[in-house]
Structure formats: C-alpha cells, structure tokens
Image: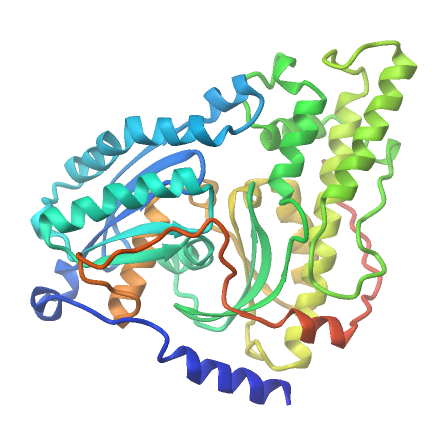
Length: 412
C-alpha cells in the first residue's frame, strides 16, 4: 500500500513543473551552460556563477551576522535593508570574478521559498529585473532543495538518499528521489535547532564573553561546550514518547531557560551577567539538541529500510544546513549512520551555510532536466512558508517505530 502510493505520487510529480528554455539553451554544449545563483532567504546576501560541471567560476557573499549580534537577533526589516544595500554589488562581484557577462548566462536561479518574506522579496525583485533586462530564463529555487542537493556538486551521489537539513530557520528529514522529488518524513513542530541555540546563547549573554563577541549563537555554544561538563545539567531529550520523525525544540529551550534562571538565583547575579557554569550549560544544551536530532534520524532510517525507500547497497544520509557545520552534532549523527550501515556525507562547512553557490547548483540541476525553467516575463511570488515534497509524516507516525538503545558517547 505504502510503496504504491509513493509510485503514484511520483508519476504525478513528473507533470508538475513548467518547462521553458530559450533556443540558445537548447543548442549550448554542456561546457557553455552557465547559471547565476542568488540567495537572500534570511540574513546572507549571496551570488555565484557555476558551469554545468559544478565549477565555481565566481562568487560573493555579504554576511549580516555582526549587525544582528548587536541587535540581539535578526530583525526582518533590518535584514531587508541590508539586502537592498548590497545585492547589486554582490551579484556584480560574482559576475566580475567569473569573467562571465550577463549575455553569456544560460539562466538565473534565485531562492523564492521558504525564508523571511522581506528578505526573499529583495532577491526576487532584483532577479526578475535582471532576467527581463537580459532576456534570460528564470529558475525559482526552494531553499531546502538547494541544501539537499549541494553534496551532488561535490561528489557523485545517486538518488535516492536520505537528507537531514538543519539550520537557523528549518529542520527536516526527507528522502530525495530526484531533483524535484522529495518525500517529507518529519519537520520541526515549533522552532528550528539553530534558532534555539541562538536564543539560549542570547539568554546566556554570550556576546559579552571574550571568546564569543563576534560569533553567532550556535558557534558560541559549540566553542564553550568544548570545555563544559554536559552531565551537570541532564536535560531531557524532547518527544521521547512520540514515535515519529518530527522535531520540537521550544520545550527544551524553555527547560534550559528555567535552569539558567535557577543558576542566576544561586549565584546571586542578574540576567545579562555571565554565569560561572556557562560552559556546562552550553555543553548540556548542545548534547540535548544533538541527541534529539540523532534519535529522529535513527527512526527515519529504520522507516526507510522497512519501506524500501533507500537502496540496499551503500544507502546514504546527507547532512546539510547551517547547523550541520557543528562538529559535535555531526559526530552524533555519525554514530547513528555507523550503527545502521549508512554512509554519511556532509558538505564542507562553507557550503552548509547559506550561499549563492548552492542556489546556482540547484539551477544547474534543474536546467539539465528542464524542470521549473520559466521565461523572463512570468511573474513569480515568494513564499515565506513552503513545505518540501510530498508529506509522508502520517505514514511515519502510523509505523510507530521504537528505537533500540544506542549509547551516545561523544567526546567534547
């Protein structure tokens, strides 16, 4: 019943996309196909030019991290204004470094979903003006699809494979069956892991720590956790009695916040002052997030094996997204893949965070298959919320897979 439904859904997906390509695209050799990728889904303005082999001909990235650290978090209107101020320069830098003229491009690919609406709007507006000025095909990109496919730019990875995508705005588990064919097994029910780590870091006032003043919240947590004792604060892993692949981090974060308040009272300090046990709280926080991600991923792997969704020979898990650059979390996931016999692939940290390269590569993959390629005069809307693929979460929940115990012994 389950495989039959998947096959039927897959057939429907084949007819879902608009195909369009100019005459020049159709005649071009593979070496001449060049794609400009533009990324503005959150707080990074990125652009890159790639050829069809995945070679990065030129790229540029403007990061807003330091601005948002000073404001205590990402303020959408601030992010929007910074994108507006820098996007033209960033795109021009990518083109200049590539030595490619707009007339030589085969297409322009841009993130249009999901993300911060005000940020997405800047990238989309710029891109549509650009493709109409230069009469180029436009390829709208799903941000999480781009994260999932980045690894294929770096090495041969055949479909299907399992993906765990974790970032500041998203967390999901899905089976990638094709460039535009995904089965969604689970996602976050509240906030993303990166968002939780950032909020804990702000509550701990880590920006005041001499080692963390220029680091994002997640990176600050990872740094301090190396010298912390995670066993001092044994936070409960979320959703222990929910036998699905969804995530929840809000309850864990509230538990951590209560612990921070308790420690402040015991030390007789006010909020905004660094706790003496800050390293231990960071270590315990990181471990709890990692354990939650690992357990849900373990269930997803078992579900895929039971339903034949992954190849029996060399099945693969791809771990990507900004939070995937956390080495402790990578190790936790590697324990699961080693136990279950999967190959774990992680793009280098620079390709895990948001960038124009991954958007351009997604455009290359779609251009090859002629999927989702639009004429320059077609109006496109951005979508702040956009699920990835076909929702199979009810099937996962109905399977009610119980996990065998695995010892998560990870050295700091």
